[in-house]
Length: 162
Image (cartoon, rainbow, N blue to C red):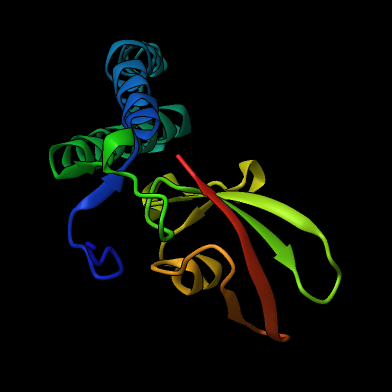
């Protein structure tokens, strides 16, 4: 089994790659043009040394260009986890894991993803998060201890799916 905890590459699912590519395309084709237009308009206001609209537009342009470079580097160095890479005998990146909180009996389901793709609000947790780290490499039926600021939470792994 591959150890994804100290991976130097960006680990992404195909869905994560598509989302980053979509953002990159939007920044390059839409936002760049919008910012260029704002800069052009702000130059028309005159004296650039005291032109807050110009300064703001230039700062936003720098942010957008930085984000474009970041996205291009993430995508260039991406390790894509395809469905056939996902194993279901133990928890791995890309797997959907159904858990039961031992104390409350609450059932939850998470998808384990690389840190770039993590979105806890949509039940996508990072392989580097406390829960993700605790689950990696464990099998169905295992009880895992997750160390959180308030102590330890115990989860039982009920299912592992693709």
